[in-house]
Amino acid sequence: EVQLVQSGAEVKKPGESLKISCKGSGYSFTSYWIGWVRQMPGKGLEWMGIIYPGDSDTRYSPSFQGQVTISADKSISTAYLQWSSLKASDTAMYYCVRHSGRSGDYYFDYWGQGTLVTVSS
Amino acid sequence: QSVLTQPPSVSEAPRQRVTISCSGSSSNIGNNAVNWYQQLPGKAPKLLIYYDDLLPSGVSDRFSGSKSGTSASLAISGLQSEDEADYYCAAWDDRLNGPVFGGGTKLTVL
Image (cartoon, rainbow over all chains, first blue to last red; front, side):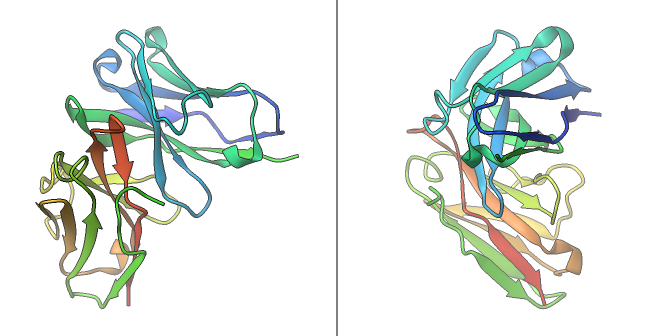
């Protein structure tokens, strides 16, 4: 059974750093792009970027380029999303998603349960 | 402002049929497949329809998708109370080189 299991909720102060994780199981972790989707409180879904764990090729949405870093450790089938200096506007639910389908025309067939990040002074 | 346009809300009575529209452009829906996601209250989204009209295993055939030009639709027949959720359309965008979403449609079953 394919599963994406994310790390737990975080409460941070502005300016602090953070790294959240997403562990994949039940499939070949290195053979699928895995990405991150943000959902701000009461708002819709926004794609942040993706990584191919097989070779660490990483792509970012222009809206998030330079704001976050996506990485992966294929030895433990885990992808990461990190911030070096959090802002209150980073408060959101973050989902990791497995990308499936044709190259350049993906859909998200599996979602993690979400990690709630709260940034408040 | 989402790249794909959906109505903010729709409502219909139980056992009836409802459709949710999704409008885009030639760089996304016009040239790539449309996918739909269902987000039940307090839950992570779930894949509902992929590649315009295909149902993942386990998804009820009361759900169906269609596409024409730069617009797509999700239809739900035989509405049930458990269908109350937010529904999002998405499509790969050739200019972004990544997926774009609609703003989401909240379905209320009256």
